[in-house]
Each structure stands twice: as structure tokens, then as C-alpha cells.
Image 1 (cartoon, helix red, strand yellow):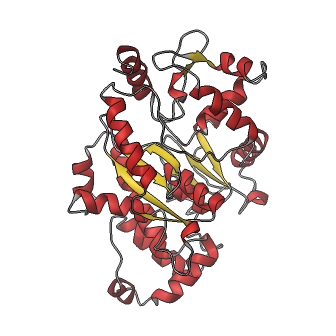
Image 2 (spheres, helix red, strand yellow):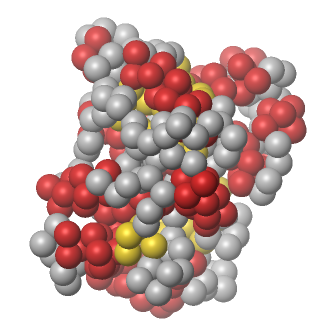
Length: 350
């Protein structure tokens, strides 16, 4: 994780176009959706509009596309001609689903492309192309397009195809892996939009709205921390949370009982455990939580722990607001947060 101090250091390097930082970080610009090298000649964004990444792969997984000016993935001084050709081909048609004949048309050996991309970016070319295509779909969803419009415009002919493609970006089918290293991912429709659930046979690891910014990166970090392959499928905890969500949105449930697996620091887990204690229909301030866990001066750290929650609704970070009554932030979007708070005030278990 990149610290605030390191982000400020990287930002100064970005503003000064310091070549000494080439290869150390990439910057994603929230207002444009692109990511750049430190020496990019483009006009510099404000600090608050920047997200910093240690690897190009992380920027891609966060749905940023490569800048056309500084070409962070295909700059001739940093990558081979083969990678340059393929990256440019994807940017020309990011919605394309690559097949063997497409490589032959470019006089490119598919296995060579795989090796070079894996060595340079930590992902194969097909994984890169799929990430770009899925990132484009997620961007359209964030702009308010309906799921059906999105799946058609990105070349998916059915809802199941779109959902499977989203799941497949998380990881390929495992080979020579034991059952303990596999997590299943499934799509769940809700009144507030689709969610993605990831679990094994014992517990739920992640539950997020699919249009949450940076979800792809969040999933990649989960895969790395658990050393798991994440594949399309279902498991008992997913079936359980799907049923509980239906009851929650029907105002027939005030406490989730699906077994969960929390991955976080001791401090983060102490915050999450306190959030679960907030009764449905009520809210607490960030300072209330910091006092409750015995860290009265850790309000900002509490807010960061809130943002790191990977189990939306189950760990009710939406019930935490600013001390002045302002809603504050929410990874799923402020409109959802407001809807959830109002929904819970009206309902509760019946």
C-alpha cells in the first residue's frame, strides 16, 4: 500500500517530470480515466485527482487506460516492438475478443506475446486485453448505462455472458491447484444494482457493488493475499448471502448471518467489529467509532478502515457519517449510502 507521504513524493516527481522515478510508479488521473508515466508531458492534474500505483498492472485493474501521450505500456524506450504493436492494437479496438487468427494477422506468435507480457506486466496479453475490455464495460456502467446496454455495446450477447466475462477477468480456471486455493465468484442482482460475491465453501470473502471504482484492483489484492485462483461459480456462502440480501431489501432482515472471512489489520478488524454493532436504522460518526475502539484520536484512520471494508452491507460502513450530520464518503456512491440509510430507518426486521 502506498502511504500518504509516498503519494506526495510521487506527486512532486510528477509535477517536475523527474526521470529518476520512471518505473517506480504510475499515476491514474480520476478526471480523465487515463494513467501515465512520471514524465508525461500532459498538463498535471491536482493532487486530489491522482491515484498512484506501483505497477502498470494495478492501474489497469483499477480501470485506467494508458495515456496516448506518454504511452506507459508501449513507450519505445521501455518495451519491445512486439508489446508496442499489441498495446496499440488493443487501444485501436479495446472491445475486441482476441483469437489465434488475430495474432497471425499481425505476424505475431501468440505464445511469444504471452511470455513477453507476463514478464513485463505480470499478466498475459489475453488477460490485459480482457482487462481493458472489461474496464470499458465498467466505465459505461459508472456513467449510468443499463446492464443490457453495456453487455450489447461490449459484444456480449447475453446477460450470462456478460456476467461470466466479469468473473473470468478475476482468474483463469485453476490447473494443478487444490480446492483450498480456489475462490468462487458470482453475480447477484439487487435493487441498488448488481453486486459481486466471492467465497469458498466456508465463508464469504468479498461483497461489493460491481460499479465500485477500483473493484478490479480490490479483487486482485484479494487473490494475492489468499494466494487463490478466483473463478466463476457459486458456493454455500454465496447462496446464503443472496437469500439474505433479498430479505434485507424487503425489510425482513436486520442482521446478516452468512459466515464471513475478514482480511485486514488488527486495527481494521476492530473497526469493522464495531460497525457490526450499529443497530439497523441508526448511524454513528467516525469519531464515535474511534472512541468506541479506544482510539479517540484515530478518526482519520477509522475513515480509511471504513473505505477498506470488502463486505458491503454486511459490515455496515454506510451507517457511519460525519459528526456534523453530513453523509461523508462511501465506496458504493453517496446516493446509495443515502438510500440505504433511509431504507433502514423505514424498515428493520418484520
